[in-house]
Length: 350
Length: 166
Image (tube, one colour):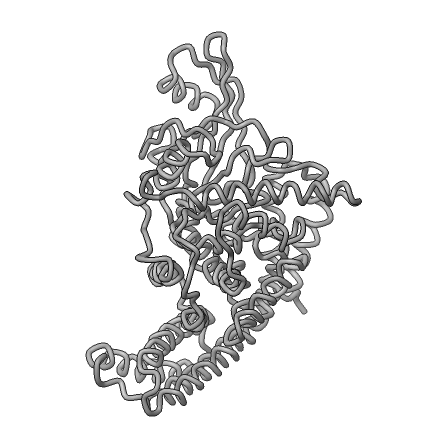
């Protein structure tokens, strides 16, 4: 049981006997992984930490927590803003053997109050926020992966031209191993997407995966820390823009991309962006369906996991059914219409 | 006269919406209620038609898979092809048997999963042998089934599962 008492002894073990846990708050919704905000007194000083562990049924995303720890540990030494990672344990007693990562809490919030207000001033503010996020993505995407130690554990495409193929092979392999139902339409959609894989990329970058609103820590309208790195991968930087939740509609999309391109020193190909918008819908199926396995075996019977792993997956299957066989730009337009509608399927990854 | 399952599900949903949800302020409890509401919508759409839908879908699957028998499964996938050919024949026989008497939904569902795994295998064969004689015809038939299957399932999931996911 994770509570103030158990975290008290856990943090004392790591930070010293003077440490006193004064407040603990679990963040919402935490279906894939559980995150706790922990405030401490350490002698005369105060501390604040993020304690992160897998849900009882394991993470929904089929990536171990240690991977996220390794990504953050290396990023912290770069110009990319991330919270300071402090320690990782594979199977501590406090969680009954589930892995734990602890990082320092960053001052900020995952929301920006008033961002969607009406009027010219609010619109200009939204564009500034989009530009700042674009600069942070550019900093991430221009990192030297080898010099910063990522090539030691991140699967690397053989070349920029093979980046999309690499991601395709990785996720179709995950799908074959994780699916709880045959869903042959998803198989057929994969063949359709394979015929449309982008054949070029500006470079191989460390990509964050889900990014943008709801994902990062913001302070004074700037990204204070890029957060949640479980879906990080080496690939085409255009792919991150396809996963930039709400950032391209925050201001003028062309201006935001141009700002990013100026900062990064390379261009984002529109046809690649279209492809990855559709590809991300396909990838949501194995990602979310993986979470249903622990529901089916009885180890995690939460209704949220059931709805994400089953209903939401079947909804995405329906969306793929609407797109399959169409030209990619038309399919991307269908995705955009969904994202602009009240349905907002991208929220499935929350 | 007795209330139908859908009516009972609807009554449960109404009670939760009118009596429970307005007094719940905890975000975890509110999220659980939203999830339960979605599941109740899904069950109201699925319960009255799932049996007949699966029965129809299985007959469709059997016909499509039988039609795929013309696709030669010999060649580079010979060993897997033999297994697949036997599985296709076994599936057709089991679908025919399920039409005797009154089949349980669980039986129809298990059969449906089995048939769709076979169809998934055949899709892979079709793509591996693209351009060979007879393959396009079989592939078109498999695609036709996929379109009909997803149309049959649509009311279970759309728009039921749209909206806030948690």
